[in-house]
Length: 181
Image (cartoon, rainbow, N blue to C red; front, top):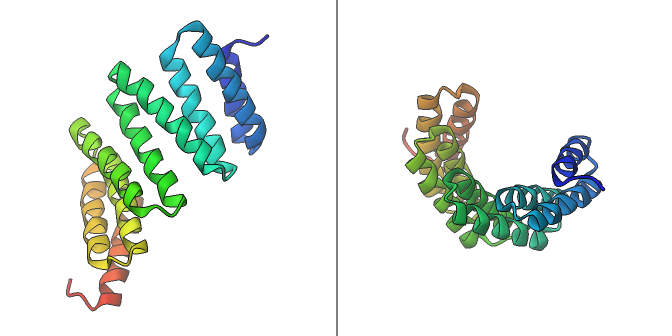
């Protein structure tokens, strides 16, 4: 029998190779192994990876359960960075399920935590996620504003490629809406 850590390594390799169903199985075995050993952090990491594999397989409701489980474990351990990541993942699942208000709630929680941690690039990533959901909701002025927020944060963090993408999105929206820049 392989250890939970070995199953995680196997899952990473399978996921990288695009074998998501097999990766899912490896991550599930890792999660069970970490749980049996009482390793909540390992269990949370495995749950996150299992949920990511489920997303790639289009099994969003199951993925949401995995992210929520990981969220609870990481919250119990006070691991703010991982809590923020789970909120972002949860937001993306809700977005993919066509639940924009729930998506926004997840992204806003992630954004607040990344701000608290002083992580400008990750905060900017959440602004772009929020902008996209507002775009889907046809709230174009808010989408524009969020892309501009992201642009500024990407610039501060030295992420030129992401800054340019956010700026391009904001510029296209402004042009389509006839907004003065």
